[in-house]
Length: 156
View (spheres, rainbow, N blue to C red):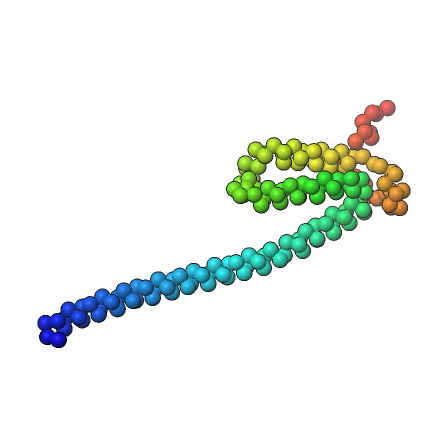
């Protein structure tokens, strides 16, 4: 090896070291990204483990409210369960309208179903079905309603 080739080999070695450093830094960045994705995935799993807890708590407190204050709302429970199932089905679709709630009104079936549930809820809040209290052996609530419809309208 002649002395004229030595600077050329040194520059090639320097370029090779720089390439290795660039590859190494890209590998480190990639490894950091993989670790970040794995951490976020684990966090997401942890979050999804809490969903059954929230659903159970919601059902428990809704049941307590229904039995204690307005047993007629039991007639709404199957429709409400269907409403939540329909919403979940929409949420699991690719390009789901649930991701953009302002566009949810375009799903006509869901809109109709939600209107039916709302109308039934409002109707059941103002109706008393005494047969349900007898069927479940529950005393009607003594709590005064916020609004009274039909009482005190006609003054003598």
